[in-house]
Length: 478
Image (cartoon, rainbow, N blue to C red; front, side):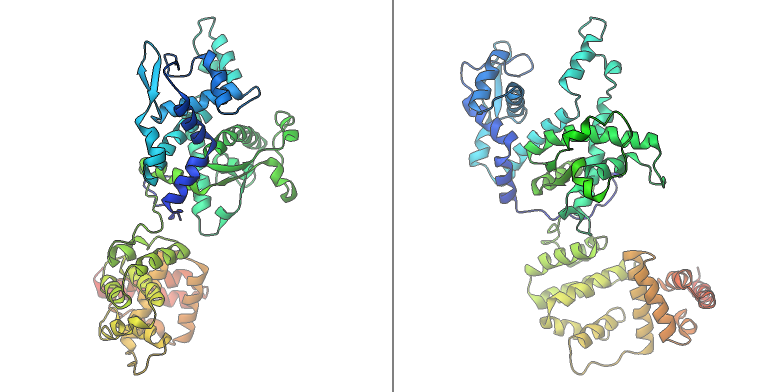
């Protein structure tokens, strides 16, 4: 995934709702509780962590027990320090006080709360990329008694590990914001691991690749267990009974009935917000539905050009809700004009938007009946809405609108099956279509005819389309 990619738009929950979710996460709520618990007698070490003798009291304050209580309390304290809920006053004395950020959790805006939560998320993501404590101890011991960390013995590359986790989370984000509603269902852990391990051009994974997928699953199982308490994901862990076999043989193909045993993960609404914020910080174009609501019609039509249909529909509804119907229709039509490469798709998005406006848009459509670029679109809309006294289009307008429509579909979908059916229908319904089509005064005429020649299954008709495209290019002087 390149940082120049434009990702599908995310549908975010309201910030007030997300802030409530953030405050209720175990990681942030524990960190805030320890920040309020800390006092003059609280001491930290050189790294800002609680001194060992105070960890039991911190665990008790959080109501934690068991063998992981001290470690969980230590993590909560580290989050409090990293997010500014606690501030180290004197490093030499190891004294602390409540940080300025603590008041934001009770008196700040939803954005303030989410900003603190994002800091907590970064801390937990950093921890999730670190090997288990036992492995670290072994690696330090392996440093020939020097007490230094031996990364080679640990077989741990911090940058590679962080990149691996970022890649997995990026794919989970794409599945969540995708058009096919995949984000509504949990993702099987084997599929998520395979998405970053198995090459796209590998039809059948080799045993070596399957073993890598199995290893990745075990790493991700540990990582998602850590990421669930910060509210990033909902996670059903790998069945413990399967763990014993993980090192014995490569992962076998997973049957549908067994998939839940291998782990299931779903991005939460808060997690979607968090990953989008990280993607934006990394330079990705990661839009959210509603981003264009306060912008002009030109920004709406251009901005939704690359959106999947459902997302474009939702964004357009947001935009229309803030405007009077007739004024919105006039603004949309004005923005749809143009002879540039993106103009056909703008007109398609305009037509789709106008279908949501309703009958109040009729005067705006009648005003452009004589417009060379919008007249055909206007007649289609008026006919669909049962308007009376709609003048019939000229043959030139029909052909111009046809070329414009195919050009828009090409830009929106590429060589899709729907476009193939449209091309076949046009050639079938209009005898001598290509004899007239090459003369159409539209910037995309030649490209459209070439596409028709590429898409039509009948070789004879495809050849006619290619000949027509050649004539159109000659006419245009290209």
